[in-house]
Image 1: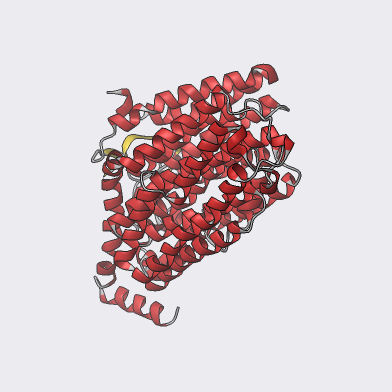
Image 2 (image 1 turned 90 degrees about the vertical axis):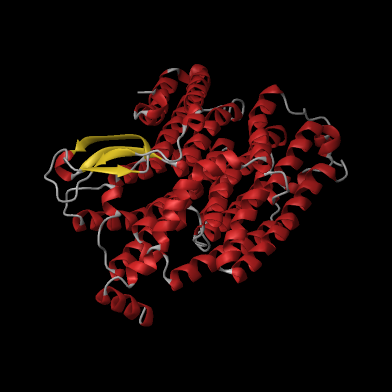
Amino acid sequence: MDFYQSHWILTFLIFFPLLGAVAAYLAGDRGARQAALGVGIVEFLVSVPLFFTFDPTGSCQQPSGIGAMPGFPPEQLTVPMQNCVAAPWIAEWGIFYRLGMDGISLFMVLLTTLLLPLMVLGSWTYVRTRQRSYYAMLLALTSGVVGVFVAMDMFLFYVFWEIMLIPMYFLIGVWGGRERIYAAVKFFLYTASGSLLMLVAILYLFFRAGGNTFSYFDFTRLPLSPTEQGWLFVGFALAFAIKVPVFPFHTWLPHAHVQAPTAGSVILAGVLLKMGTYGFIRFALPLFPLAATAERTVQIALWLGVIGIIYAAMVAAVQPNAKKLVAYTSVAHLGFVILGIFAFNLQGMQGALLVMIGHGLSTPMLFFLLGMLYERRHSYEIEDFGGLAASIPVFSIMLVFAAMASIGLPGTSGFVSEFLALLGTFRSHPYAALFASAGVIFAAFYMLPMVQQVAFNALRSPANRDIPDLNGREILILAPLVVLILWIGVYPKPFLDRMEPAAERIINTLESAPRMMVATTPVAESVAAVARNP
């Protein structure tokens, strides 16, 4: 069997960074960054062929647990995943080491492995204390994130979801800014609170399935009543909404971004926030289609997305701190993802997935640039800069490019992704799309003044006159992000083709929900009762 069509690749991508974390720690402060860079490069190079060997229509066999005796169940399910692995872990509880990948998780995994070596390079001169612990935490965090995106056993998914919290907490709390403890604790408490609700929902599904399986595929086959779906959806949705974060659960994010080191902000914006939107697409919608497609649920999700887009843009526009400004842009951009998801059509879903990828490129690029500037001037305050286009022109060109990609300039990933998300939303909810479209204008309102003040205002401060421009290492960090932003913006077809079958399966599941509601009279009556008396 070809390596890139087998289960070994996913296992390798999860555990190789974890082994690398041990190696980096043992290498000491002198060799930790070299060890981490080597691990990051290998991890990325091993993952790249997944893009070219991926079969959008591929499937594999997974064992089922419903109605089976403890142990390895004999029944097999054909599931629309690739690179599958299913091995007993705690068999008497129905817990399997169960992994799989489709067109949704593919790009999240590739985005994670791409950012890993870039984060190590971005920390090369930024982190000067406790380096072996820092790089060990960064690599361990990568293992947890990759595990979240490929886990198909709900217990395993929850384990990776929680494992991810620990290294991120330490990255913020140990290597962050002056208010790092407050930011780290707030990040941990918010995320852990949502996770507990999700754990309760997972345990309910486990016992509802007979107490012998945590399989996501088995959970999708459970005959849940509308009331059950409603409460379980709330448990999952709150956990994912906090992670996104959806307004009004966003208040932890600006503090975490501002206080985190550069690599912490990069991985937070690049992939950790996508775990929330991924959770909606992968779990909350397919597991509970009746609750997800209920009119009240859709209206709440859409308007929270719209409010997040407009509110975050307004708040970002008055921020004196450039890093906090960029942090609020994440709330706005991920509002477009929520709109695309709850549009419940192919254009919206593909747009949401493309926004996740595009935001995972442009916003990390902005954080990298601000981190490089901080190393030179030790400030994120916009008023401390001005005229940098004259003193560091290469940096200024990169800053303008990243800003244009963030606000959705045609030819960049931001334009095609937000256009698809808004197009899908307009087809199903035109008024929500109309209000959300204003967010595109507001994006220019907060981003362009920041770029003007930093790069093009008068060069007044002597400290800005003699700072060095980007060096070769820093250009190497930014170059792949520039290439991918332009590739997706100019020719998104290879990305859309790979995600289309997976997106269609999600949409088909949701479109069948109204038919499920009228399939039997008792169910239809229950749904009508819930609608009349929510």
